[in-house]
Amino acid sequence: MATIRDVAKRAGVSVATVSRVLNETGYVHADTKAAVIKAIKELNYKPNYVARSLYKKSSRLIGLILPDITNPFFPELARAVEDVAHQYGYTVVLCNSDGDLEKEKNYLDVLTQNHADGLIVTTNRQNNMNYIDLDIPVVALDRTLHESIPEVRADHYGGGKMATELLIQRGCTFIAHVRGPSQLGPADERCRGFVNAAEQAGIAYHIVESQFDIPISEQTVSELLDTYPQIDGIFAGNDLIAVAAVKVALKRGISIPEELQVVGFDGIPLSACFYPAITTIVQPIYEMGKWATELLIQLITKKNIAAKTHCFPVKLAERETTKRMG
Ligand code: RIB
Image (cartoon, rainbow, N blue to C red; front, side, top):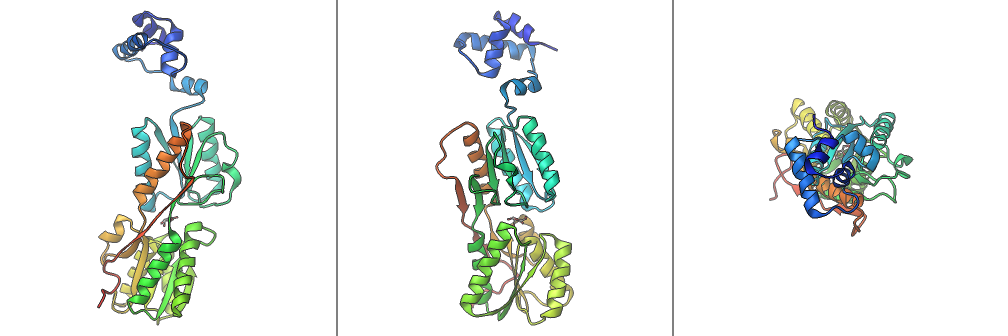
């Protein structure tokens, strides 16, 4: 295997010059640089990335911390992060925390010890102080970490309101919100939008808490419909909860959307493939991941950033779990 000395010999320069080219430090004449790059290619020289990252305190790694890769929302985010990072020559290290603070802290330590250049974090543990005093840039994605940390998210409050107003417009008289976990920013905001729209319309409503998980939500929805069989509209905290709601209703012989209307949140591909296709509030998932990665790379490369927080609008996708107008 070729060494840095072999490259230096082939290019007719010193080892220090090859090192300057590799590390992009100090002045190297363009012709010398071209000769070094040519020698690297001819010898198929692979720099020692561990040694390089120790020296430069940079690894061109981006850590992506996600709470649950089994929720299809997160692979779509990860795909965007990976696409953009790759374009800029960064490698993404995917860390699935399972919403477990200790596991998340462990990943954080490993990433910082290995000189990750920056982090994109979607944590279920908001207000944890682990990210405040890091030496590397952090971008919070779909969650709030701290006022000092830039954030990319969607309009959860507006989406919650939009979903609820649709149920009301389509004739529901007693609506329920099967919400995501409390203390989780997006779930709290969607719930606030629901309450606001229901209160404004003066309609009867009920709220139950679930998890962003199909089996748990099936149980929650079953209990809800046992207690309140008159419910004719459900705003589900995300598409997985919506899938659970539709499944429970159909198993009970409740027709959708005639007797029960359901609106989800996220716009994951499953929501359109499911039968009946789920009416949902679509977050621009890929765009959010892309924006967060571009923002992080601007911070890593010390560019001025226009705004620290970016809130994407959401939109309604009307499908088969709500009634049509007229
Ligand atoms: O934690 C999972 C949920 O948070 C996703 O389904 C999406 O709604 C995100 O905001």
